[in-house]
Image (cartoon, rainbow, N blue to C red; front, top):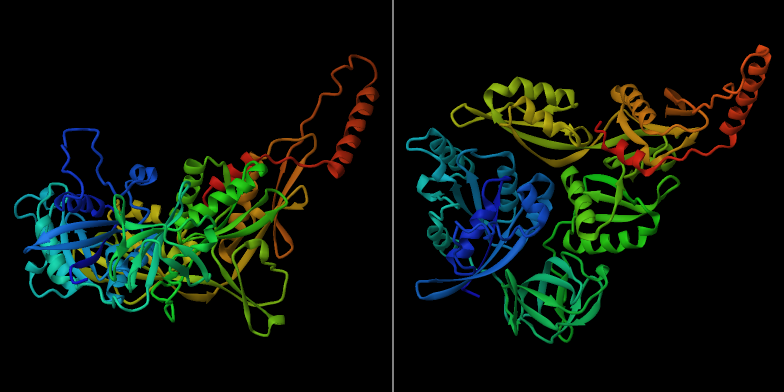
Length: 609
């Protein structure tokens, strides 16, 4: 156990985490050093998902085992590469919980960013040893001021006494990799635990394999796990046999035992997704541990939306796919929901808008499903008079009735941290105020006054859709932001209920702030009037607030030219035909049913705010 080191790589998005992981794998001979003139060689090997390569971001944490000889001793290095986007902070927290140290990587051309600070605080909260690294030094010319500015910011952030504590590397060219490995071995402590205690292994990830069933990734906190051992998953109490155990070295390497402090995988033939939970503790069936390991925080979804199959016959396939995705993405939560317009589906909780988009793409690409996602919303606290001051949490606008007697409604607020160049302060403050934000304290200057750190308290609903795009636009791409849940606060909110042909359409209902409600109501009516196809009768589209219609549009009826056969003769012939058509339209409006194709919902839900 003295020769085991568990560490992760944390950084802002696109600062070179996955490239650095590649160089560590090459330097430890885990993978052969590629010929870079060969186009068939892949970079960023740990980003094995098609979406990760396409978008250039890390979505999933990836664990890998390496061996490295230092001073005549062979060390086991367990690396977990983590995402950098704010929506995947739960992945970062899971990785941090299984490590004793972290490499904090900062791009010297971009300096410290908002997510750098957020991930650092997560690591410090778990008492991890931090090894600071400045990456992409090969992109700077001699005496480039950006290098000194980044050094100064990192020293201030970490409280370093000397700039020599910060390692300068180029992950792309392999500069400084040996020094990183030496610092990992000499500074990061070995894991604690006792080989002779009953087995306690914490699950930090899992995947579904169609041949072997569910494969659980774990870290042994105490004891030893052996091949063929009878195991109990403590949250469910069910017993399984360890058919295969081993270590993760890009591919599975079977072993006979995994000792305390080490990371590995177990195949036990589990087929049911509900029986493997991230954060669960595995113990020995014969000599079980007295209690489980409580190291993982519960996932807290921030954005909610419903997913429906375009073809209702695909519901069972969607259920199976969601369960398999849940294994690979512990931050996804869902439960069954039904709609009169869209049929059966699932109401899901996501960490953010990007997380929602990734799940949608994975369902489409990996499982071949065609789905509809409803308008995203956040969770609200509803205080009703009949509940004597207690509140209920609603995640779906259809559960909210603004006709009831309410004491107050609370919405989630987040702490938004923004880092940008100083000349965009005014525009950023104006944007945040427009989004109902309140500035916290005064702004802090970094890099000798060239960059500034601002903090705002804002409603989560205001930053879900276009906040990041607008922030990047007004700052010319220089600003970065990150957010963390703060608290719930009382707000003047209203529910917009949509009626099509006098029938309520729940999937399109949304909750908005009072100052935006009339503008949003008119937008919804206008968009739907363009998307709903014409019928043989006119279709009214209405938006209601507190039982009052505040906006309306009408889709005009298709009209047949019933007077085309009339030529010459008295005008009364034409009037009689038109009157007959009018009566027919009136009757059809009462008994006719509006057919709204799924494409209408899809196109409407693509319209942002």
